[in-house]
Length: 154
Image 1 (tube, helix red, strand yellow):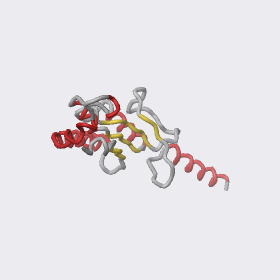
Image 2 (cartoon, rainbow, N blue to C red):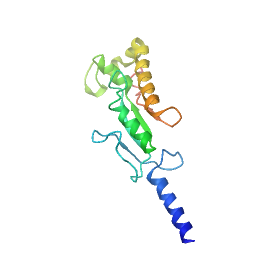
Image 3 (tube, rainbow, N blue to C red):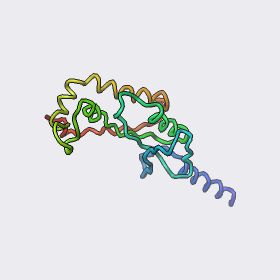
Image 4 (tube, rainbow, N blue to C red):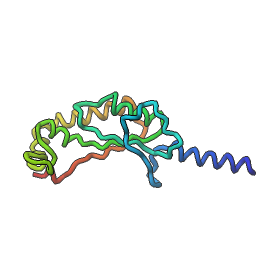
């Protein structure tokens, strides 16, 4: 009986120490940091996911986003992306966040989307292809499209 209990407890503890994102309970993750690399061991930390902001580059960066994605794969964690692609693309065109002056996303965001739709989609496509190459396509990934509809409504 003691052996069965010890085995059951070790399996339960292992599932908390090394578990992917689970929709049935609260998930704890952390932001990707420059102090991490793809070989960082996250076991025993109780994490379900790692998160990273994407969009500030024209394409997927295998050394930054790629390292995070590969660390997720090695540690059985879910990669979470805060996709700020449209706003970052608009910044590349010389516009700033709405609270940072003018001209900004609120005055120009919708026009940027209309004028550069295919370039914006290509940026998303590059990120998605990079993630698929480094993480695969069978595991769950979470994309939070950081779209502020009010910015682009005009």
